[in-house]
Image: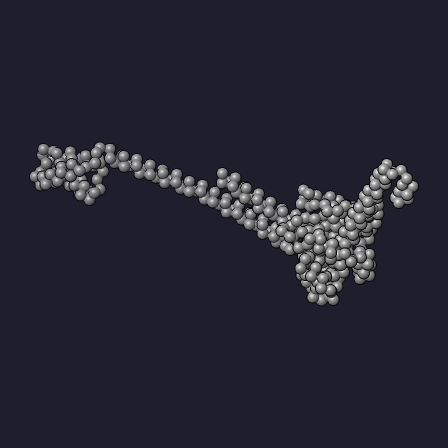
Length: 180
Length: 174
């Protein structure tokens, strides 16, 4: 083992103990520690690393880990996009609520309770009295119409009764006609 | 699905708004017409009348407890008479109106309509149309037809009209 190789071994050991070695670094470290010409000073390191390798992850661990991280990153991006879509939906809801609120508000504002005509109390009373009088006149006309109809009906009944009288008692013809 | 729900909510809100608008449109429709004389007496004004005018107890009770508002629309011009004739076509069962009375005596055509606004709260419309003049009275409040017959039995339209004309003779011209 030459000086360069020993220097390289020392650097790899330092990196190993610092936890900064990659999978290829560790493979190189194992190869160097397994060299038959390894100086005795590295014997303790060889045994230590040999023992540690029993707990080492299986081959391809780094790739699997990297893939897992990539997948997680992809999932996170997707979740963020979905979150963005949710925000758009929320935004639409808020916008729709605002439209409804503004619509109802505007309707109430522009159609607020009617203010009355510009009248004095005396004029208002005269107008109301006129309105009630028109109402009364209409109702009276209706009642007169009903009375007239009832009167006509009575006349009809009287005529019918007189007709019956003619049939039952022939002597009552003239009298019944006069009565009618 | 969410959009559908939002759409339904908006449509419902618009329906409510349109309905609210329809309730007030009768006064607004008439107010816009220059050929009509429109007088609207509010609840507040009726209270003021009761408090300031010398009235008998029966009239006070009628004005303060039974009537919410009164709309009086009159016209002596052709355009206004035609407008009121067209407007009376809106008083149909489809719009919630029930015809109580229709009298046609050759001189005048009188129609009385009723619309139930809520429990005990009614709107009465009296439409009197002749060749020379048209009058429409719209009255709202806790009014029953029998109350109206009892309370208005002694009133004389011509006397009330002459009193009104002597107080305020202005009318729109042709």
